[in-house]
Image 1: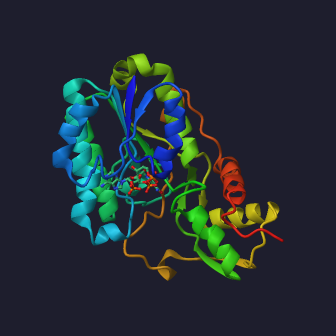
Image 2: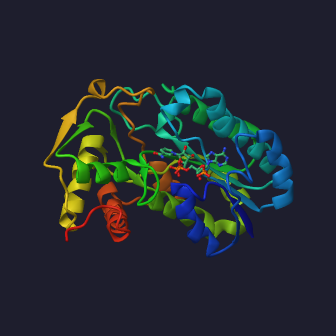
Length: 304
Ligand SMILES: NC(=O)c1ccc[n+]([C@@H]2O[C@H](COP(=O)([O-])OP(=O)(O)OC[C@H]3O[C@@H](n4cnc5c(N)ncnc54)[C@H](OP(=O)(O)O)[C@@H]3O)[C@@H](O)[C@H]2O)c1
């Protein structure tokens, strides 16, 4: 079994690699060897690699920059997945891809199900939705894991930003009116591995019966201020010497960004549980090991 795994420098790809490598040969090209911004070259590379399964967490994830790099975001997030999905459909190779809460407009309070109406409010969200639609249209066996608020002990993410700022500043002002589920990359990787690994021999059949989009986020919900507060508390309990004294809740309107974010990013987990038997950890439980990893790596200042 040969698995083509993209984005192994990233959060989700990095977390998936050791799990998949336990049961398969991993082909993990760098972003220059398998460049999603040059979709015209991908078919030749896929013919060279000849994978039995494609797992594609690589994406253009710079949400604010995407507002000014629409073309690049669409190449990486929409055109490249389309080319990959068409190759996969032609060769009956199953494809696992990743989507985002940003495909929704974030209105109301309800949790979005897999078939809830989409309506992205950012270029990034539009480009990711276009990728999802192209994969479905290609008609091959696929699973699109839709996730949110991803973080890990490594990479560029909210956890690491808050840890750094908490060491530098007395006061943090954090948005409190966007609701969602912080999701550790390792929890996403664990869920995908739980679905894929026991079924490596019959993924086409599994995805034909139960594939399509599936929400994969940690259980529970909070807002960014709540997430930041729990991070700060967790670091303090681990003996990290912090400067921060207060974490102040603010409104999205008080923290303007180039791209709009959905106010409501709740994703319903019943399809994942009922169809695949996967139960996600609560976001607070998934955070603990990542805080441990951050502190162990010496990425935040420790008491002398
Ligand atoms: N991060 C979030 O909060 C979030 C939320 C919801 C959904 N998602 C989705 O979850 C998936 C995984 O996200 P993540 O957080 O793991 O992403 P990430 O940490 O930002 O990593 C992105 C990966 O994509 C690769 N990549 C970027 N441009 C590429 C290109 N032109 N060609 C090939 N590879 C390229 C990067 O390679 P280099 O390092 O070499 O550039 C990196 O390995 C993505 O589909 C993302 O849209 C993420």
